[in-house]
Length: 321
Image 1 (cartoon, rainbow, N blue to C red):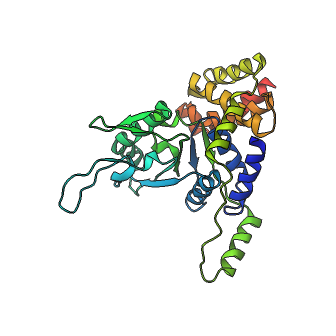
Image 2: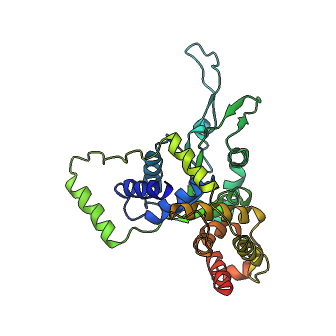
Image 3: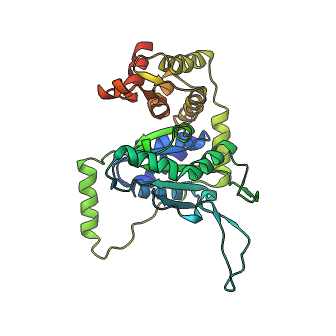
């Protein structure tokens, strides 16, 4: 089932956002494994358009909130409103409680990059804590400052996007199953975009993706992922990769046990997407970089030498055959 769902969703999203099939497939693996994703890219590559199309293809409602260090929208988590006479109305759940919640983090221009990153983390500490709480509670009740309970939806998928994930604290980024880079679409796809805009002189809205899933099919697909078999060899292989990140010379802090769990669950979903009921070494290898890259902190001297987490993970995979 999940294999067919994935093909249909990739087709629907691909008609709306060109040449991002890899992102869509990896995001689906995270979604059906019960995880959430980070999206990183320069501005203008269609992160928001992709997120909206992804939600529509899943048949889920979508809400987006944009944050910067000088702007914290109050509607993000709990909405407090008044009637025409100024009387407070009952609080209502905010955007975080949408089945697909997209948090867009923007950095304001400052003279000091270091100061900018520091300010952003401190200014939005309560935002980060709400998101951490939502991920950790996993479809259970959240409470506001007045201890009012609000139930998160099921399914619930968080997309956090930004130009530079360093603006987010490690405690938050570590809780996302994958970090995905949205790349330039390529010459052919970009030309197709130009031609489409050239023809659409009336600026009419593009056709929207058609919902592929229902709540029932999403639930069944998740059960399919849970049923995927995992051999003891796979457990050992996953642990071998994550444990080696902790001993790499260029690494200050390696991947945590949470990373191992994420790699396992993502691999199970990836196997189901491929139409298999068992995980292979290839599944783990194909997911190691997006699952681990944001969980590894490099030593400052390694960063100066141009080493990045992707290179470290790739070298570990090669060394293990």
